[in-house]
Length: 163
Image (tube, rainbow, N blue to C red; front, side, top):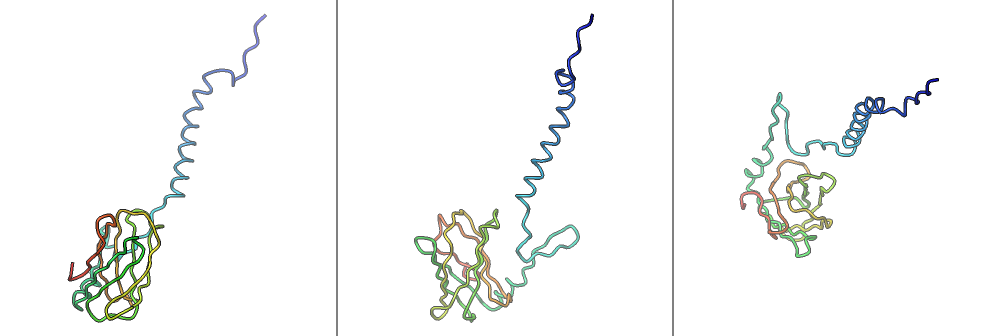
């Protein structure tokens, strides 16, 4: 009399054979999750695609230089209040974009209002970041002043001809 054979799932070989495809399915699921939660943000600057090359258009910076525009941004001790001293003829309101280099969800857009001749003021949300890309522009997007800011070391940022 022979002993009954074990069911297939009690043998080692079927599990070893299935381990490879199961690992691939798990890795594919993890990859899809990562892709779904960490997508690349669209480029938010003045860029043009020319073939495979991406080039940044600096027409608005040239317009600001032609108009002789410059600005100095003063940051309060708590980092929330911004006062902007400007040089040149500017409208009653300006837009200041604070762009985080790695996380678009931390980007901020501030509407600065004139409080005195060539002085503007605005408030920003308290966020932790060690570096910002800054763009100051008018509402019609004719010109812009751009620069970078590291909050730890700088309480004043110069943009344009004054930088």
